[in-house]
Length: 283
Length: 163
Image (cartoon, rainbow over all chains, first blue to last red; front, side, top):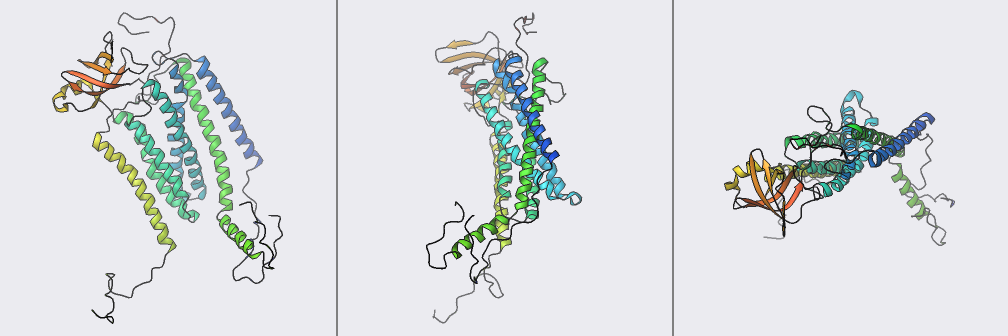
C-alpha cells in the first residue's frame, strides 16, 4: 500500500484505515523458539533412524515378509492421531469448560491438536489402506475398526468446519469444546472395536489385554522408536500450530474491518474526476 | 368475498404481528443446529449400519455351518484357518479346506487369492453355501497381530510350528 491516501471529504460513512495496532504480537521468546527448533531436529533425527532401522536393519516377517515394515509407521501414526492429538483435544476442551481453568489457551491448544490430528488421521487411513491391499487383498472393508476410524475423521473435520463459523472467541470456544467432547466418544470405540466386534483388522500388538507385546527383538525396538519419533513430530507440529494460532488470535477479527476500510478508501479516492485509482492491494 | 375484507390473520396467534427481524443470534443458532444435525447424522449412519448388517465383519466357519440351513444362499464373510495340505489350484481359482474349532469346511474359490494366502493362516471367504460346499469369489487374508522375524536357520518343530 504505497499509494498515498488522501483524506476523504466529509464522507457519510467512516472512511480510512483503522489505526495500526500498537500492542506487540505474541511472538515467542528466544528460548521458546530454540526449544521448538530442538524438538523439530530431534524428531527429524528419530524419524531418520526409524526409517533406517525399519527398511534395512530389521528382518522380514515370517508371514508378511517385507510388508511387515509398515508396522513401524502405521500404528505409530494412529497412536498420534487417536490418543495424543484427539485425546489432548478432549482434555483441553474439558479444561476450557471447567470454570476454574477456563482460558482461551485451552481452546487454542485443542484447535491446534485437532488440526494436527486430522492430518495424522488421514495418514492412518492412507497407510492402512496401502498395507491392507497386499496383506488382506483389499484396499478397504467396512469393518468396525476401519469404519469407526473414518467416522472419527469426519467428526473432527466437522469440528474444524464449525470453528470457521464467525463468532465471538468465547462463544466459539464453548461450542468447540462441546463438539470435541462429542467427537471424542468415538476414540474408545475405535480402540476397542477390535475387541468388541469381529474385524478384519488385527488386534493390538502392544497395548493388548494382558499387555504382553507380540513382537520381539529389533522389530520391537524399532516399533518403539517409531512411536517416539512420531510423537516428537506431533509435538513439533503442535508447537508450530499453537504459535501460529496465537498470532491469528492476536489479529482477531481485525482483518474484516481492515478489508472493509480498504474497499471504502478505494471508492473514495477518485473524487476529482480522474481515472479510478490503482487498486490498493493486489486483489 | 369483498375487497374491503381484511385478510384473515395468519395462524400466528393473537397479538400484533412482529416484523421478521433477522437476528444475528438466531442466525448462529441455525448454523449451530445444522452442524449438530450433521454430527448426529454421522453417528446415526454408524449405528444404522451396525444394526442393519451387524458390526461383526465375519462369521466363524463353525457357527456358519451350524446356521447353514437358515443362511441358505445368503452371502456371508466366512472365517477359518486354511488347513495344511488342502490347497488345490483349479482352472478357475483355488479349492481348499478351512478349519474352525473341530469343523472342517470345503471352500471353492473363483479367482486368485491374495499373495499372502497360504496354509495355517486365518482367511475370510466371501461367498455362500452351495450343497455342503462354500462357494466364494473373494478371499481376504486375516493376518494376526503377532510379528516373528523370518530366520534363515529356522527349524520346524515336530508338531509343525516354526521355532
